[in-house]
Length: 280
Image (tube, rainbow, N blue to C red; front, side, top):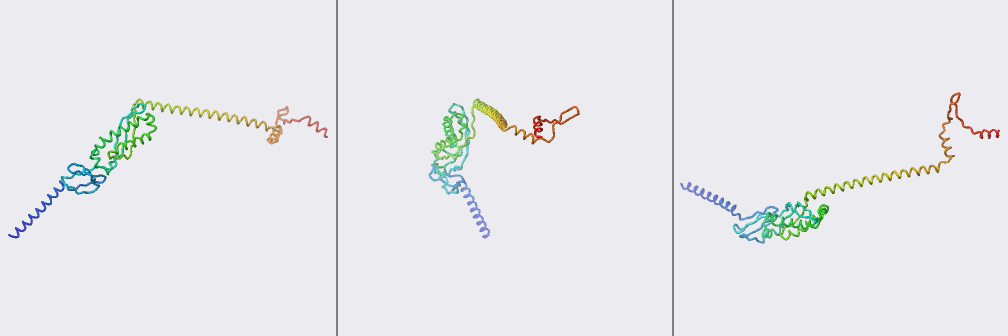
């Protein structure tokens, strides 16, 4: 009987220990006397809701339950797109799509959370109005045509001014990209018509230049032929012509039709015959 009572007592103690351990585990999971900060995050420490100077790096950190809470903020580079309307120097309406790469300064996450809030409040409360204002100020300095032709210059100006505007809040701008510009339908048609006119003008200029070149080539060829003929006349002498005729003669006399048929045509100079008789 004593053995049975002893076994029951041991079982009760075992159940008590297991139940106590399970209860402590539940309390630990509920109260959480520790905080885990994931990769790419920083932890903002608050005691009774008041932001502290301490910033938690990645990893696990012990905290005082109930008294202390931790708000985790993403410090990785994030990208957000913004659509903003503006007017050019020549009063053309422009809608611009910008892609902004940004991140929270890891050393100032507590100040950012205290002054601004989390990521959504940063985007809606700080970045959206800042992007709109900076864009309007930059495009107002350039005509619509300059906005298109000087896109790189405009991008650099927006990038620089946005960085100066945002950094005071502990937010760092990594890069700004001008994704797209869109103008009013009337201005877009005007640009298209201008481009077509420029292309037609270039084509007409090319055709005229080609015709001029061809005419000049004809003049040069005519001058070359005239010069060749002039030089040929200077070099052709009776002796040279006679020599060329002798070189081309094949040894046969030309034939003429006579009463007895074809007979060779021989041109005999009477003076040569007379001269021959005198010599005899």
